[in-house]
Image (cartoon, one colour):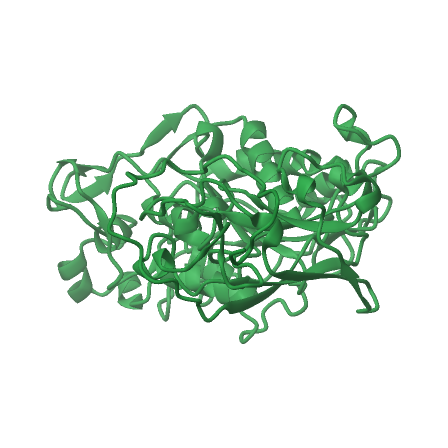
Length: 505
């Protein structure tokens, strides 16, 4: 018998179209040096950092609170349990263990004091004081819902409504901030443990959600001379206005200081912070446990108009409640995070007024990411064979057509509040079918399933995710989580090296 031989190999549908089977003769089998990856997942904890654009615009004021109110309600799930909870009675289902903090996109204008731009702006601190006369703010440094309890005095019986009231009470005033919006830099400063701006906000086992609602693109400048109001810089960069962010943030086929539609535009990173730097920051901070969500102006078209001697970018959407400029940088970050990024989901942009569909899509992504963890590489069996059933053609864009995922080499444990660890067994082979979720007498147990929407190989390194099945389809109890360690090949999908790794039979 060859490595991984067994009577039956679980067969799964192909996730990506297989390429032509024509290829050179296979190399001699090479047993790879496996990479062991460890991660926490399956927790009920979600930390949401909401970045508010508090510049002079009516858009965020109109949509911010209703949007998050819809999100809180959409996060109710049978996976979180609750008396009488079911897929048809979501109002009876529990919410995740939430932390919710609001910051603004105002971090000043570098060393320059401009109108509306004080040094440091709002310093990326979470807002926790009442901004509406007569309302009662939450207690503590951020809004919380833990074990069914919201930290709002005299809270309404419905936790989702109580959370919404607290957001209404403490939402930053709009307008009131710098016209140079820097939501990505604000998020970095708010979360960077080296800066200690909001110490204790992030929980180690929690999924992090960074959400940005804005009517302009990110203008986080690495070279703060972008904000320099001096006549010398104005002669070089033009008037001190948001067009500087566009011209110094994009490189297009046509000059930007010329009226008309721009084509072939790409991001620049000589003046603004590189988007990949923010992607890397979130990855270092939380690994695969991060979701980025943004409602902004459509990234295209990018069209320039001239008014007098000054150039402006035309809004990419325009409705009765406001207008929004193109946001290619925010879209680029969402794209860089693959299945963990959402930009204007459900076709909704920041010119719209109905955000429930977008909130529902974000809630589905959050709940999926809470329960699953992408493997981060091609999965291996204990015999160091690729968990793809032989013979199976692998190409640059192809993954396993049929898989032996129930032979993947993983060790999974439950970790409770007291940090006590309990081994979780592997599920029976039949439960590696992603269409089955009832583990019956096998609960709890772990499995690996294809989850391409969340775990695209281009961003996560693997289209497969580790999950724990529990009685009733729920997540771990509050305060607990699962810890997994899996072996993966040190090669990318489609690489020549992976083509030489033996496959399970």
